[in-house]
Length: 465
Image 1: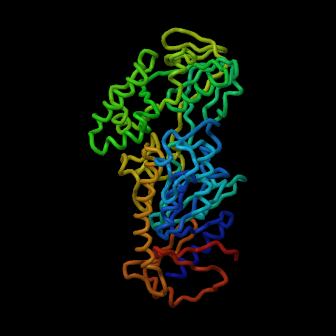
Image 2: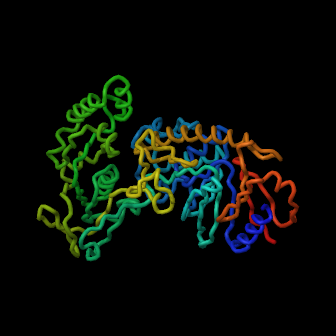
Image 3: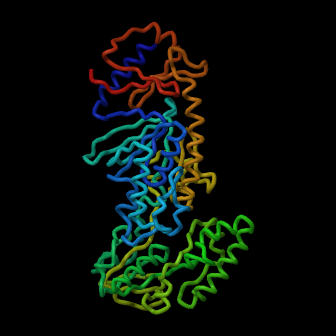
């Protein structure tokens, strides 16, 4: 039986020699952003190796390639640091984009996190026969490769792909229409009339940046929004909220935040910024919608430097028609419409992730673990703090499985409950009487090297014949 299976392995390998196959001991992590780095560091602290796959040429590609220059962390640094490595003490309370990128690059170097760059995952599928994850990738020259691992950690996060809404007349508008992922600074828009679509933290901050570069921005506000001061009562609003939640229920904390906000900012509905019925924390927990932390934009709105507009009905060559029937001329449009997960496009698994939004089906704090060694980090809608929490949980769970698997490592004898499997690129060949067959069968060792994985699987690396 062994020789029949081995003949099948040889035949199959001979047809697929063009694709490089790499066995990954420990965990395979897709995404080298803060979530992926944090998980790799937590695993390393527990003695579990890992390998990161990153589609771009750098860590934290969203921060390095798709953010505007004036961006800072919206929360104090103590709430944004990754596990086992605090921010340097000389960093400001709210680190800049450049500070944060330097911190992440140092984090990778400090923990010696192994990463394969320019490696785009095109599919990931669990092989139930082998009990391994098979991850297929493409490089910058479309070269194909495959990685095989016992554990797969999805760390591509909530912000993998831009959301670009389809607006009637977009193909007719003669000015530039850009997503905030392409916006760097307001220099290019000086003396221009710019419409910013989206009233989240990014949209508000882009409007402020445009004002500071002598542009004339307008802001589309379709939905209700909570605007809170970045600091309250001498503390960061987030830090104050976390402290109050230790002693008070969510709704009472929300009432305190709204009362102080009303005192500090006034009635925002007077300027077209209507508050939702749910409080800011309750709304965040229910929908993931983050309140806007004001850093000066509201003052510009009050002075009339930024105009609030309703939803868009259609675009024309040089103008925008709004749903209230008014029309305004604009030179450019900036889409601050956010990002989405891209997991459904490559993960061939539907029980853990929703196919419509690419997020875990189970809400925080239960969305980090799936089946068959599948994990998710960076999908909590709670920023870097939530990612760090999940990274620690994942590392703890993987360590338990890893140690259990290592206990069954094949050294001539295996656990009675473990049956190794001969594995080729796309098929597994079971050997029910593996011990007798393996000991009694002779074959040319120059042809192939049999490698035993921690889970008792015999992996067939690609060797030339």
